[in-house]
Length: 180
Length: 75
Image (cartoon, rainbow over all chains, first blue to last red; front, top):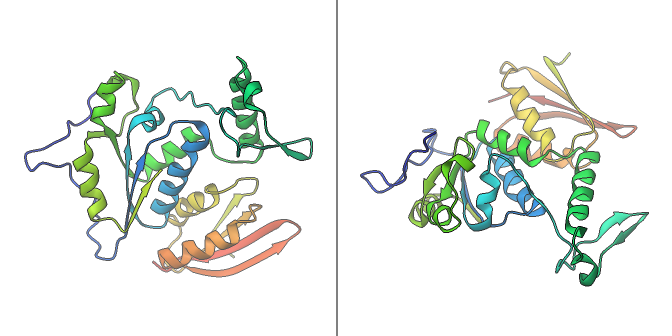
């Protein structure tokens, strides 16, 4: 499997361009890889694409895990004081000491996944697939791939490799630039 | 009668808008798409979607927890 290598002779990968003069663009840097943080980038990207924007997503650091073939995203209540889940009619949080107990993360993740399914919210896999179909441009940070020793084989088809300059170029011509 | 009916009852943001966008592709210009949804945020979302894509939200009604939207494809 081959991702196109990043820099071409002119120093950049081509920007998406549908040729229409009024097209708006959205660029975003995706830096987080937990289940809760995976939603904002994909929801924004797919919705923007549905509304006619050209979207570029730059996945770096923990955001890179969102491009893995097999997604294994979790949440933890540990150090997450705002995480209060609807339980038994109330919104309940967990003290850090309890959240640190082995197995509690897995439980919190399972509960979150359950809640998501029950409420009819799309899975990350589904949103990611929708983004690819909507031709959202996904760039994987080359540096982070090296840093965390990920191989192309770990990742899905579709994204291209790139560096900071690739992102900056996209951001320069985008109307909306987000850091998530 | 609408050219197409899209049922997104039970689905939440962003699925109603995403599915609608896909369904609209098969609606001829000037034709309409009827959408049934339960997502309370869908009303505002479809207003914004129509404004941004140049389509017309012809109708937006609610009855017993089910929202019905009719979008006319202009673009």
